[in-house]
Length: 270
Image (cartoon, rainbow, N blue to C red):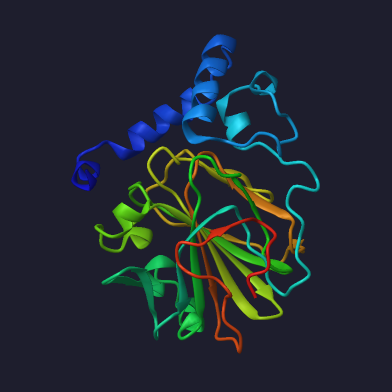
């Protein structure tokens, strides 16, 4: 049914979901959330609030926090920033990033034709998909100082494996937020990719970025501000699920991940 996504009013449906997820009617919120927990087999035993009734609305449940010991932070150079499954991982081939078998896209397209994309030529990447049942807060994979952030408008196709195998340049055509950090490894790019029903992303330093949906790229410069985050710190969240992509300059080491591997926030990936 991938073809149907070309016909759907993606942004309108995402706006509708954004509003629905914030309805505070107790019966509606509890009924839908209980159904969601059962349908997607969500494990609430690790959440700070284990009862559906304790959440203000569905989005409050979806972006739930976890108990302090639920995701220990590995003593390694780089940790996994999210719970999810690895879609792809490997080396950037000059500027090409693998999307799915037989399909790739360019780092330049992904980053909105930013000239800094050349810094990732022959570097490392990994793409991690967050399913509906996953924990949806996003954490820092390394210590980093925030340099800038770009909001890049685009489509809102689903980002599941089936769509990735059938839609060209999927991650470079969807709406996304690109965060650049100065790290001990050099300049790193951290990309949050939107998707249908995922019309809202936010960061800890900016708050909600979208909606409203913009038609032009928005650039935010933070070089004069001392915004530094430590490995494991929360850096943002998806209001509904989606995908993160990590881009790094060339390193002596590789990500110790493999495609389709289930990962958890805090585990070592280098």
